[in-house]
Image (tube, rainbow, N blue to C red; front, side, top):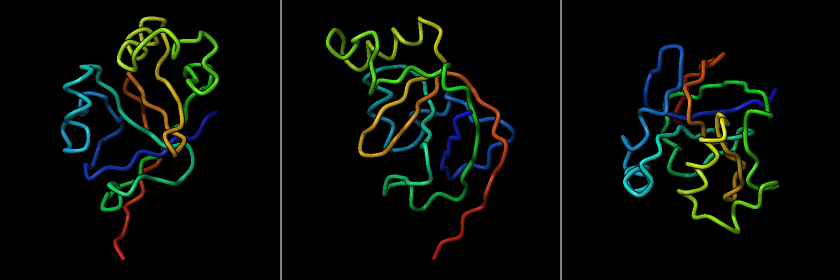
Length: 124
């Protein structure tokens, strides 16, 4: 199983849902450009600076085979498509999400996932 970490201001109940994509200032533009709803997770506990004020860290697990690994890119999608087209294609193939590296190992999921743990984060 692949352990995923999601950081948020929101106090979610049971599931992390991609329906919330675009609600934050850092995801609004991406939502407008692609229209593909997704939720972002990190593999490992590192996170991008704009999430430093997050109130919660949610931990979920998923089978790696349900995620298309864009770093390996076994179907050579990066040579053929834009990022938005890749998201749509991978979703159409039946994957639950896509993984890659933008300086952090990330996974974006197209489907809701039940989290197994929620940690309240304290600010220092």
